[in-house]
Image (cartoon, rainbow, N blue to C red; front, side, top):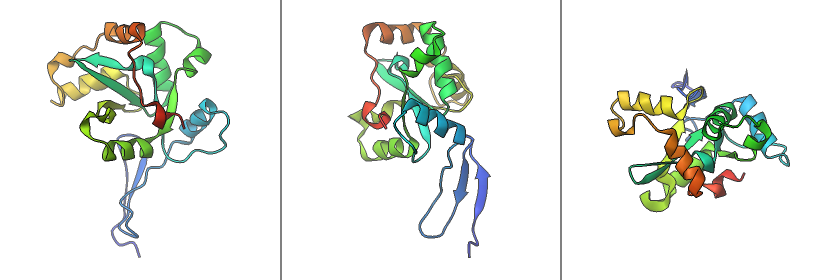
Length: 174
């Protein structure tokens, strides 16, 4: 029945099923641990639809007169970045700064909004990577200009001090 079925792993550690049946192009299967993390952040929920992604206004970066908002696929990665940015080790306080949403909702918002809507400033950080690691890898591949390297901690601190961090609260308040 499914003559053209390919099963492979994506770079984001999610299984992708390429199906040509019933109009389904592919599906993302969320990591059960990250579902658990998302549910812990939103204590009133009993279930979570989609692949959880994590964001914090404290990690919004200003670079070249534009703001960029890193989006993480693992709660542990964003917590590590928040600890570095705030030089704090209070895990419970960090969790209060993390917003959770679903990858599918974010992609849908990016698709339907125009380039000046604020949805084009997202940077998806692969699991296990920091923002700096990811930026440096993208620069090596020619995806970003060298002026991005190295991403300075001062840019995090400037956003934190001025309160100019701007996330995508509507989508991340699941």
